Image (cartoon, rainbow, N blue to C red; front, side, top):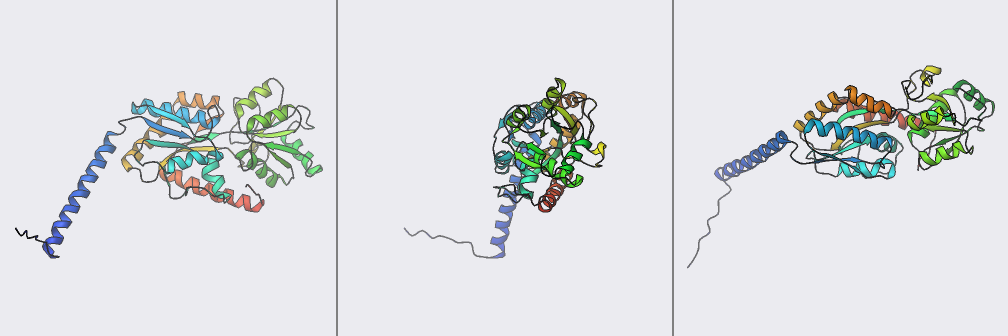
Length: 338
């Protein structure tokens, strides 16, 4: 038996049928996407933090997880994926499905300083993320050993000018906000200091207490406040924009003669590129309201931080502007961060 196969010719009729089928498929796909977005979230959300548990970025992440969990009536689980200054965590977010179930705490280190320094990264900051909102800042402080020959910022700068390069300072690592705070101060004050980078805050504080280094540009007001309270260190000046209740009476660098000085590690909430606009709007509205409640403000104050939220567009613009600013500083100061 001969079976005759009839082929549809390449005719206007055939093209119209194919167009109708394609349109139907796209319509169904769009409808499913809209339904999924409107029902969001229907399962737990994971929140990637690119630093170890217990640190300031992790603490901010847990505040955000609590805020979102309560507002969305869904579990938000913090996953610590530490390494490479937060870049490992940022990369996991960039490569996740853009369905709203993988979010990340975006730190200054992997989203601004690293690209500004020209470091090779497995993601593109401009194209690989959905920006949801700025979250806030965590302030740092300059602390000194009790035997350091100065008690305030003016005297420290005077000492450094008298003996260029003699004043040694510790940072929590090459290219960290701790390191760059010192570089910004050096440029603005016209001084030269010798940098000793450590692998994290703990060893830097240990050597400061032991007298191996006289000054540390700390990224944690909490530990600095505790040490200053028992006279183990001298608090010189806060490197962020606001005085802190954790260090009563200690002024900011900006208040002490350097207007606009603010080298505070910032954090934002982000997801992978391509997230649905309905989910973006939902998360942005929730964060904008929740981060400014008295309860959250109190939790942030205890860790030396404060909230600063934004629209997604403002978040993106802020990050790109920050990259440009750090890039200029790194170039001017001829810093090598690799």
